[in-house]
Amino acid sequence: KAISYVTEWTKATPSYMFKFNHVIMKAVTDHPTLLHTYIAASAKVALDEQPTNMDELFVKGCTLFLQYCEKPKNKVTLNKTLRKLIKAMHNNTLEKKIKA
Image 1 (cartoon, rainbow, N blue to C red):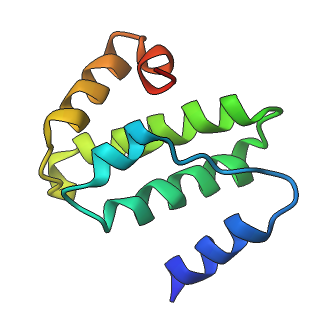
Image 2: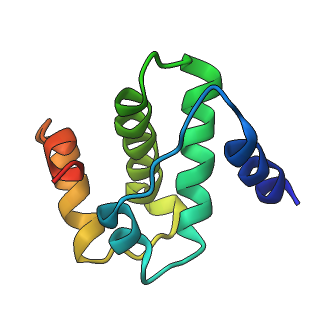
């Protein structure tokens, strides 16, 4: 129920436009439920930080999502795309990678 509420909020809020590009979709292909985690991470960023532009929301949402994915306690099986994105995050090249 919670993810349904968050998903509906992201669709209806006039303040933000949540992005789902080919890079994110490829990252969650093996685990469709991870898309909900990405949505929740983006919503958290929107509510907590109130970014001033959509690119900032996208990058920060992706960063929070990847931080979740890389934690062993969350038991996310990392596919090749997730591993590359996490590496880019640690190398401070994530923004370039996700906007490619």
